[in-house]
Length: 636
Image 1: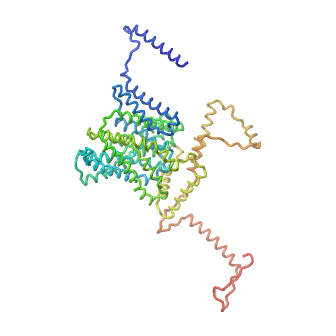
Image 2 (image 1 turned 180 degrees about the vertical axis):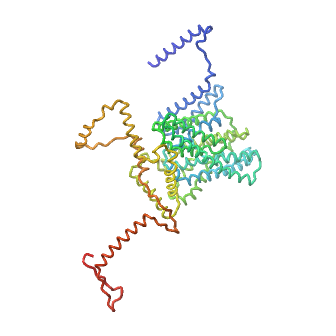
């Protein structure tokens, strides 16, 4: 029936066109102008292709359990690029500006806005060591060893100098967040390993940006001095800290703006997207880390924005970010396959093979060596299995390809891009396809699918308060101490400025209850079910009648998660300390002084009463003082 309707419509359309051409000389009823809509039409077709490929991938469960989604999308890109090139057309290439300004920000914003704060902060030291020291080790090890490889006469790449090899090492050394997200979310690895690899892929952006620009400048100048090396170290701190500060400023501005959107709920999601994107662009203007700026903006903005905006706006932000990041990720892998077909390539077997071997070797040596040092300071040690997964999960992706695309020298650029694409394909296809079987073979702990019970959450919250108190008593300023200080400062000062109305001081449990009651009442009124509400007499009769059976209310998973979050935040309020603790001076607490005075008086009265009944017998001369006896009345 659908085919008959379609053919009928086409027959009618063709008849209309033929009828219109009879009057084409007098009045142009129908015209054809594809150039007018060519760009948006092509963009829409590519997005539609990406979505259809993603939909078809998940409709075939056998394929999705064996092949990662990123591998299939790259294969689709290779196929589409080959078809376009066979038709003597020029396939679209993954342009650097398209990637860094339009495709990458949605993925990083989604990862930063919904970043699990607790595991990220608890493993911050380990993540920073892997991101900073590990990336530096990979860059210099790969760059130095590749310079030694270039000295081999059979490689015929003797014209590549040391600075160019170090520049290549800085490009290929960084773990790609897009590839890590695409693979690790499918295998459902446990939270610790996921946050270690994913956190490293996010924070090594600053090291990669600094090394790339540093070695690029050194390659143009040809000479390197000690002052230049020191400026490179300073540049790393400027790029990383500057990116975080830019994101922090825009995050505070976004949270403050959300205070005044109660009368314009429709535009609330736009402020979140625009402030985040402006943070990324502002960081890129000054060559700061745009990725770290986006992460900082999302982390700072989220708790205050969610307290100000409506529930519908929160749902819009959540699903739009997921949709936007998913489409961008799909387009990145498809364009990566298309760009591979387009070329140009300069294949050098020795250079490509040694690049792949050195990437794997440097990753293994770096993870094992750094973990040996990290485990001396960690309470929960990283086992051999954990080290293997962290090393095996160091995937490369489109960031390395886009940085290589920025190079200017044509001969070196083609050879570097060929080696980079080979490493990307090996990590995505070989490591991405085999990491799931290896996780199951090694029996690595996977992510817990079920939610933690209320009992577990209560005990977790209790342990946090207990450790904070222990650190406070011992005078040890650990992360629990600083977390408690930050929470107090947030409740006392920040919430008053960034959260609108009484919601900054009102208990969350009460506000949530009022909100849900108002929502239920509005739904009843809008649906016309207000007449179905029970009358007061009926309610009284039901209250007097004994309940026949206890009814367990059924709530949705979303509401249950919100209730758990609120209960978790309101479980325990630690007592505010009047004076700070010092190991050298003991400051008295006025409240404790008054209580101790009252207690002392009571104890003295009780002692006087009891001493009035005591009968003491003096000791004889022959008795020792220890042999003296004290006699009591019966019952004492």
